[in-house]
Amino acid sequence: MKDAPRYPRDMTGYGATPPEANWPNGARIAVQIVVNYEEGGENSILHGDTASEAFLSEISGATPWPNQRHWNMESIYEYGARAGFWRLHRLLSGRAVTVYGVATALARAPEQVAAMKSAGWEIASHGLKWIEYKDASEAEERADMDEAVRLHTEVVGTRPRGWYTGRCSINTVRLAAEEGGFSYVADAYADDLPYWMRFGEKDQLIVPYTLDANDMRFAVPAGFGAPDEFESYLKDSFDMLYAEGGRMMSIGLHCRLAGRPGRALALKRALDHMAAHDGVWFATREEIADHWAKTHLVVERPRPSEMTRDHFVSAFGSMFEHSPWIAERAWALELGPTHDTATGVQSALARMFRAASEDERLGVLKAHPDLAGKLASAKRLTESSTAEQASAGLDALYDDEREEFEALNREYTDTFGFPFIIAVRDHTKASIMEAFRRRVQNDRSREMAEACRQVERIAELRVQDVFNKL
Image 1 (cartoon, helix red, strand yellow):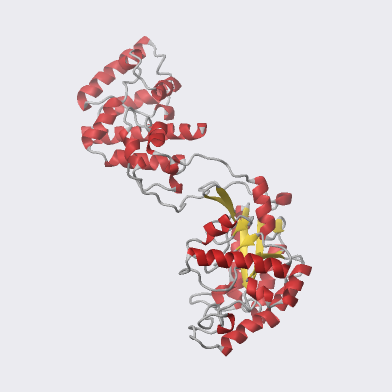
Image 2 (cartoon, rainbow, N blue to C red):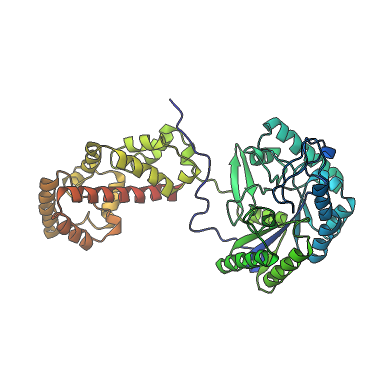
């Protein structure tokens, strides 16, 4: 059997109703400050690279200089280590901070590492070198990750519990999960809350980072032009997330960027604005990860996109009355994590019903029973139909009600060639009768469209029931 196409990206996430974060002490928001320590780990022929650095500096339009040292670029990075770091260290004194430390940069920064540790800052790994991994082989990236952990442990004294490459490849997060020692990975920007990702048998916690509330935007086109723009953006981001409640705000800083005097003062004003609010938890990423892992355990949920064809059809083949072919076709679609919800499965099923020929859709309509009619007494109702009719009282009609139902049904089926169909769980006995009287007056085209909508709604309710039981 040919494998069905599968789409690995999760475009749903938590959807319209994110989980309660339950931050400690009833905090409304977790604010997470990251100081990226990259100085001394950037591209340089001194570091064995083929060209100079060209990323995130004050030099507009910088390009790599092959086989040459770039004195201006090097001195900008040196500013971050010599002055910018210490300004941020003073400004953030007493606050919870996570350092994304490039291992080779940390190895060249004994004074700064000692200061990070004395301040109680978390030092996570920012990779071996501050270089691009998009074209690296999987083996090369894994080897660098292993060496980064080894060197970090040697320099800091403890292994990193968090990982962030930054300039990552499509393999990075999976490789970090497979490494097995990280309580969280931050190479994602997909949410305002932590979330779990499955890699084989491994559930890896993702604590997403930010590129918008980030001083890197001082060094990219269409970014921040002045410090007050950075300040305003941080305040607005905080105010929105604080109003929503139960969110996490990440702030990204770089010693050579936010460590400049004018920007550091803007950062101070933004942080003072946040600290003036009640219920603000300034936390390290490690603290957030530990909280999430403790209070939001991995929930084993059905993953229809990972089901075999037979399993999928067994679970969802009866959603459309006596029409398992719809589930068979839905399974063959490009399903993925975003279909691993009731809404996702129903979307796939409905697509195949809508894409079917008119004769096929008519066959589905004809497979539905007469409401409380002869099929019920003949015990030809599916289990779902029996329960649905009972919910509206259609299994206990008075004689006069049954007579009117049967008369309307004869007129309806003579007119349209299929039984009257309605999602009875959305109605009462009275509203069903009113709809019966109204719809029997439709022309056939309009009524077939309405009947198909009702069939889809019945299937939607049944899919929800399946998920509620799983």
